[in-house]
Image (cartoon, rainbow, N blue to C red; front, side):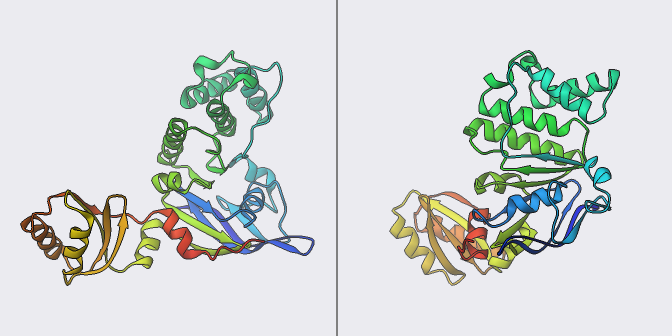
Length: 311
């Protein structure tokens, strides 16, 4: 799998504050990587450097092998940067807005119009082409911002808080668009404070705190780091106390914690042991209604890999 983005030793200071401190990570083609950290951790500064909008004090970023420091123009042709807010233009329609930025990217003639039409169709904006952009909902504005980002068909997408302020349905729809772009072979680096959303769409994650990388890796690798045992979720129709006592008596269960109306357990046995555990619950009349592998989510990973320090 090819690496589209390689950040190496990025450092950026503002006066005495070192906002980014020797940051290194990679994003691969066809994958979505979450960039998470507390407020002031250095996420936006790092993303702006990667998008050629700021210069580091030291370090470099390669986008498909092209340095954003030495060859910024070539790098920009490969990058689509979506900021956390969309600037609105009065008396400008959706089509006019996209047409303006298409011209800025160098698209001309029939190619420009075809590209605009393709972008509007992908983002679901075709029926809003004549709508004034300052009358759009937050969700449609984010789609328009994404559409503008896609006009020059970049290989790498850098998205800063794209789901901020969206309602639940708009977040799901936006997440599906991002996944579709990765399935086309694009690399995506996305920051968000809505960790549950990233859990559903990310292949890997970069965790940053106080300007330093706290942890980076694919989600399945990081989950395995947190526990070497199987994590299972179990819910029964019996009272929670009865289920907890039954689980505690099983020699394969080495950890129990409540979640929703059931329990997440850490289990040391193999598949035969898991089957025996379920059979024992049925035999005791506890009536299991949910029994499945539990996926460690990003909130758990984030809390595990950070200490809560701000700068």
